[in-house]
Image (cartoon, rainbow, N blue to C red; front, side):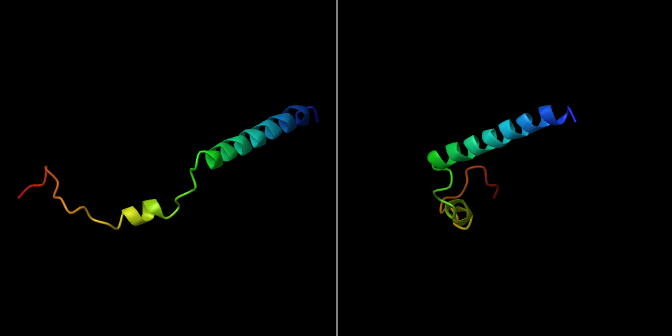
Length: 54
């Protein structure tokens, strides 16, 4: 029973820490462009790479 006196505050602190990290990512614009990274994979560069072998 005394273990709960340690586990409950630790779980609350970890939950608040996770919430703070999530709010920090929202404030810094981490989720603003959700489709950009997936669409960038589809476009090819028109220039050939310099290290391409013939």
